[in-house]
Length: 135
Image (cartoon, rainbow, N blue to C red):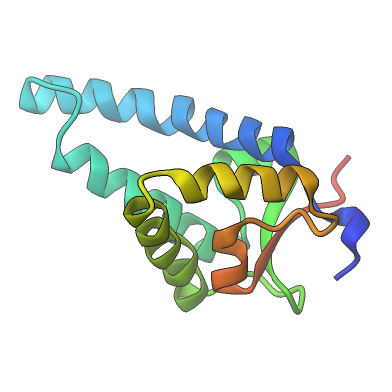
């Protein structure tokens, strides 16, 4: 893929922040109303399914990524499938978890400093985050 289309740290961070606000806040409120607290398995499962499935059904977008004009793509330029997203989110998440977040910091530097702007989870899944051409 053309590396000048790859998205750097701040735009990716902004998209994730928008997703957290747009999805996380309403989920926490719903969870609080239904379960009496905003931090439980319901919220975690729905958030996980959102980040896993929405990019599969919506061509590499989440709501935050769509607003920011960016999308997840496989290295051949095609949208991610369920297998790709499982590798990206589950295996990537496991790596981040077992390193107690150290790999998250490494990934942030990778996105900020590498020419191809790819994080650890991108390498695991064979993905890249690119500008969608909407701007």
